[in-house]
Length: 319
Image (cartoon, rainbow, N blue to C red; front, side, top):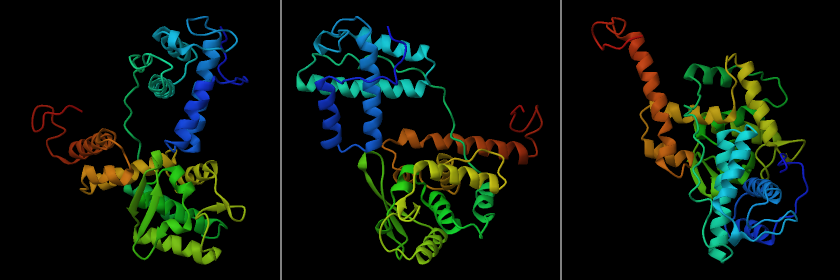
């Protein structure tokens, strides 16, 4: 069996090609999602070609109806052996579930052989975020003489103002903004549209950028003239902003999104409202932020309450 699942040329079965066309045209998935789906299926095909299991052949000719759940379990085990992160393995399993569900619907399989395979357990991670002071330090301690100051400042203000994902920032066009009404139109995951409020400071920063560049259409954030800015460039801008702001953490775009949500929750915002603003499909995803708020609250309590340090009285909480 081949231990390498990447860097190989692989011809996908017709069924897989049809599935990718389906999610591209009928489901309107983003190019980024399609790229991930293709990569996951290619890796599974490479694995299956060398597995000698039912439904496969060394020449890449598949009979999906003959496949058994064992081939998916073996693929998951192989990924685990290669020390892939549980989140990456879970994503590949999710891709296969969608793929086999499509094959069942089209009559090429009798059962979804991936539906009963359990996803690997992932360690629960509480989102990392910045304090209000740290966030303000990033926004206020910037070099105004930098040639990209106006662009980068508007970008950071929008991250904190509206909790945007890095891909949403990159895809913003000038026409998506309604500065008079302080709103921005965003196309998020699954091509779902959200209309989000924008703070006065963010509006001011964007207006300054547009006045400077003199453009009325096209990408909001660009590099090298009018070329739309890349995700890598945005990521580097955010990381460097943390360094320049004197924050002793590695600041990332997703951390700014977490910071936005956490500060809203701390300020008394309703969890359902935060879910809508972030574009989460389920409330469970948003509820992660309640753990942050509770943890922060207990630290403040322990620090401030007169009896919190006494093991035998008051709250009884041990430090």
